[in-house]
Image 1 (cartoon, one colour):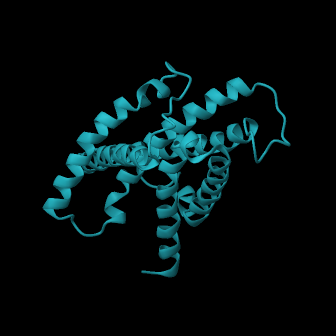
Image 2: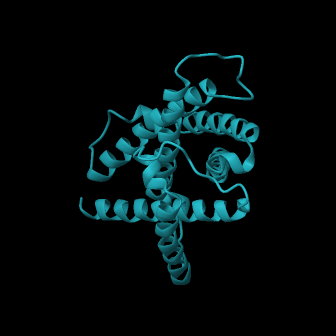
Amino acid sequence: MSGKRKIQMSTDMLMVMTLPMLMAYSLIGETFHEAAGTIMFILFIAHNILNYKWYKTLFKGRYTPYRILLTFVDMLLLVIMLLLPVSGIIISKHIYTFIDIDGKELWRTVHMLAAYWGYVLMSFHLGMHMNTIIRKKPHFILNIFAFIISLYGIYAFISRRIPLYMSIKDKFVLFDINEPVIFFLLDYISVMILFAIVGHYISKALKKSI
C-alpha cells in the first residue's frame, strides 16, 4: 500500500470514528462537540484534497446507474458538509462566539437537518465504497454478524427518533443526560452499519445491472 493510500485510509477512518461522537452532542459536552466538528471539517477538506482526481473525472466517461447514484450522493454530501460548519459556527456558544449573525433559530434547524441527513448519507457513501475498502470477501460469520447488527440498527434508527429529526417533525433533539455515552454510541454505530450495508448492496445490484 502506497504512502498516499495509507494517509487516505487514516483520514477516512478518523472521519468514521468522529462521526458518532458528533451525534452525541449534549452527552459529550457542547465545547467538545464544537471542537470535534471543527476537526471533522478539516478532515473533510483533507479527504477532498486527497481525492481531487474524482472532481477531474466528473465530466469524463459514461455515467452508469452506479456512477449516477454515487455522484448524486457525493454532491449532496458536499453541500451538507459545507452547511454543517457554516451553521455550526453561527450557532456556536463556546468557540466561535465572536461571530454574531442573526437568524440563529433558522440556522439551528439547518444544522440539525444537515447533521442527521449527513450521518445517514455518509454511512451510505461508506457502504458504496466497501469493495475498495475491504479487498477480500468477508467471512460468512462476519456477514451474519453485520446482518444482525443492521437489524438492531433499524430499531436504533427508529427508537432514537432519527426519522423525526430528518423530517423536522421534531425540531428538538432529546438526550437522556443520565444515559452512558457508550450506549448512545453503540446505537449510532449500528445505524451507521445499517446504512453502510444498504449502500453496499444497492451498489452491488446497480453494478450487476450494467
